[in-house]
Length: 113
Image 1 (cartoon, rainbow, N blue to C red):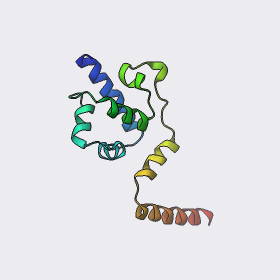
Image 2 (cartoon, rainbow, N blue to C red):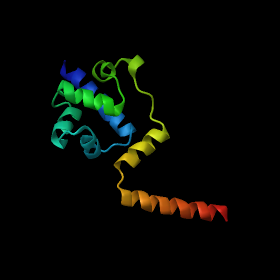
Image 3 (cartoon, rainbow, N blue to C red):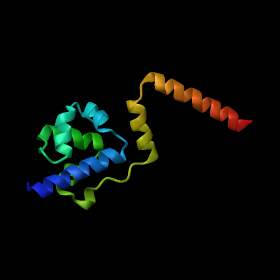
Image 4 (cartoon, rainbow, N blue to C red):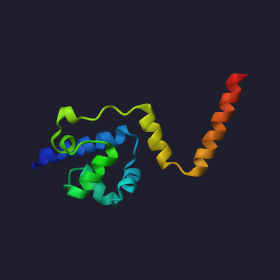
């Protein structure tokens, strides 16, 4: 793999991670990888090991072909709002979820009046 190909692969990973609403820190927790290792991958300083690449592909719902080679036919679709909400919910603690439920309840009551 050339340095240019490695950079393109890193860009595809970063773009998909961001489009799903993951922070680097949150994504590292999701795939059980240290932040320093992931940062090196995303900045094209280090090639990911195969098992790491598989974890990344699964969590980002991307094919290995697309990540490595950029094959357009394997390009993931733009994440839906539901995908983004699921990422937020997956990363939220119960206190934040309870607070959000209270806010939405108040908003619903206010709009009904």
